[in-house]
Image (cartoon, rainbow, N blue to C red; front, top):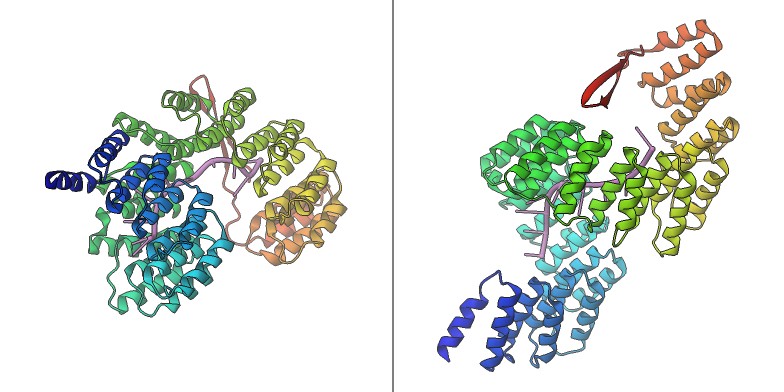
Length: 562
DNA sequence: CTAGGGTTAG
């Protein structure tokens, strides 16, 4: 008996178990009449959960009469991690009706589940429950709340929770710094970072990740470099998380040389680190390097995952080069990634941007399940290829399937209307977006509306449309109208619109050049001269460059427009 | 209890 206890203890303390091993251990525990012991039951429930067999976990839970808080936590966590929020929540409610009180880990698990399911209502209820149960100042619940409120975009509430805790621990500081980082409040994160160090708290890898994730523009490069220096001094650069966030920070700051230098100095390269580098190249437009490193990764016998494939396909789509796209499609089929929604959506996008409408539709039709992004990809691709009526059929299908269209759906539809000159449908869909789907129009929607009206010659209406918008109106919207004025040769309105733009953004020479083009179209050369002489600073536009690939040869076409 | 790469949006 003692031997068996000892053996089971050591087997159950191992972290990784396969499902068959779990079943063997479960059978052994039943044979030795230990299955009522909550300790063993808890372990086996966890192993079933790790191996995605929630059914068996639930069965064992049901059969265990004495349910410790650990057993409850294990089963609730199992459902929460399997994204089954409803079950997790109903088990939690069931637990509240027993005499076993939830502990800080139970609450933390539910709090996390609320944020992952974007359920603010339940989160607030749970927050009340936590305070009532006396865990209001607990640091484990506290950091879970800070993370949850930040994830839901309520950074101010997160910071209220944080500031309500008298002596925050390291996890708490980290949660708040990450919360700021997620929403780009890098300055607040940095201020908190210096405060925590003043209070004698030693930062760790989590702290650094939180700080760096908020740096998203190239103007923040020097701040990123400073934090990088701190990492080197403190020896955090060996951490895989810190390494990949450094790579992506440098990528976001448009500094691919540094991103590569960090990457090549890392001792442990995992898939995420590779992905950070490849995505960096892909998003900075260096599609050849993105593909080169994708191949290099494969040469090392490592397999890409859906996120990485989607990102590489996005790079291929940008350059409308179908050859490598097809190769990756082959890779997807060989490795069984075709059922992944993200992968299929980016395949659709790639084929449609390359002009292979049939192939894109085929991928779409073969998808086992689709989400709104899949539909958005296919709608925008159809619009791009001038197939507006098919795009609208897809929109109807979204509604039939009970999916909820989002901002991007309407962007794609409005874009399809612009391409097809469907003024009536565009007006109608814009109205429905606001009235029926309660989506607030964003700048891009307004730009499409102005283009749609303006290119149809309804310049007056487009102008009045902009005047009806709440201030401040984005310069992109006025710019769209100015380009319509140019296309229609209406110099009167062009002058009014351009004046507006000169007042708002005097530094942008592009609008002055556009106005001068309109004058030139009217033969008003004196006015051309006058507008051009107002241009200060750099008036030379970057020469436009375009490539075409024809039978394996890259032809470079260069057009220099002043 | 806290962390890294992300498909659609001419």
